[in-house]
Image (tube, rainbow, N blue to C red; front, side, top):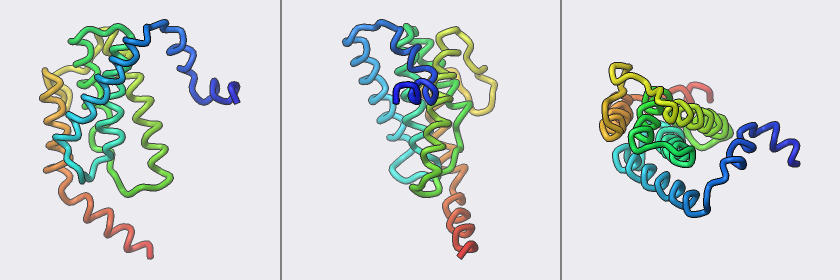
Length: 163
């Protein structure tokens, strides 16, 4: 099983080699949970966007950047990078495809954290990206709440046509 885990999760070795204290791991987890709750407060309980990708993966990216020694500014870059990467992924109901969406979000979270801690954020002028993490999150929520208002109806329409 460990060989399979190494193949499926090539970054496992990277995280094991970080040698961070338990306190830092707990802080990273706490930061990620707080960011997740903050994003969900803007997105809302029901959204046409996949909350696992939008909120959880963005929060994970911040936690990873923290574990990698990122500064406050770099943690903000992780949010900006995620806002310009995964915003708009639709939620079309709990099913097997969710696992693929979570895998996509997880890969994006790692990539965005790594680029953030290397001071390579997306530009403020890129799409819905913004100067502050708070504005990036507001833009993400605006896309989900206003921009995708018809998405749920269209998903239902497509599913009904398949019957």
